[in-house]
Image (cartoon, rainbow, N blue to C red):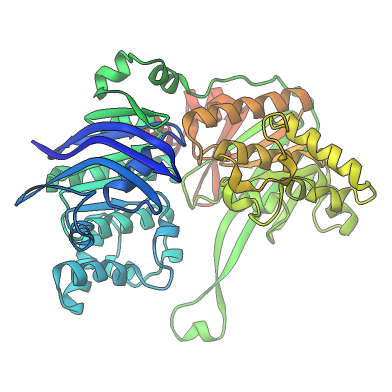
Length: 530
């Protein structure tokens, strides 16, 4: 029995069509995945079901089954659509940190839905909110109900979002990239949670994703979307085994391919840490907290060695301490014991620290948030030269900026007026190329890559991976790769270090650690990524 029938859906903005005559159905209790690259139209299609696409021109039919018969969601009165939204159809958004209200606790936000939709009293709604948090596997739900979004981990925030979406027992749950920014074990936990809740409640799930690995594990059927059109659909096992469309085949083939450049075992050290320790002051509970602070140790006794021309992958779950270690290596956090950059330790004077910063640059996870929206490309990419090469004339700076952008595959033949454009005028993969150009322009010898492909779809991630591999081969760069993506480490790294609870529990060559892990924790990471 069909729960939702999408017939001839067209979506346009300002007369420019982005979705063209899309047809598909979601059956009662079905798990359906909608996959495609960024810009394929999958998210805007999902948002149109709930009438959440501002400024769009919509045509076609969105027939949703109700007790009184099917209704067209494109033509129902706004009041009726608001009643359906959250009650019968709910949504889990991609980034809970931006979707959740930072001014209200988790319990208050879930309780608000129950008060508005179910008419519960404030007390009953809060108790139901706590029960929902418990159902989604959040430990200490009474305490977490009082927490704000910034006080929860990424996995906990996503569970809270799911609890909010399930508050009214919807018939259809739309999950838009629900695990994109999560590590492999938390990702699997969220997937298992959705699967268990779907079986328990009998709701249908429309999963929007570019993660084909997730689709294989979760969905019953899959729709493949390219440039606003459904190009292929069918059972997951059939599509994955025998894809008929060339675009589907290209998506399935977009897996990281190992292509590493050999480095000399006798190469000098680019980065070295000995007994690295990072600790934060935290308040003590009770009366004693008035007079002294406690301590939370984020990184403990970390010994790492990154040689010139080498890639070292640092893997672990969220909260394992890998990003904290990277910030210490970059000289952006206070730490104890030793961190050296080409034999020079941090804190030996401004001249030494400035030289370290020139040799050591960083590429962040999300290029959209790491690039200033108020600066042009010329200002963004050239900013480092104002610090590390202030003697350069404006014309020379512009030439260096153009050369750096061209090296990462961006030039004015593709993008007229390139230097005067802003980050929002580029796709996710193009923005990450801009971030790499910004790091390369000061001619560093080491790049710290903090989840450089996790925010990108599979084909864009593959392009960025190939770019990084080429740059390493041409410039002899060393990479400290911070990631939870085991497949990315297999493709890029020479050595790997595994972090858990602030400590490096295992390290060695990628082949040795991944083929014969000695720690149970490493084995669990590998199992979650299969």
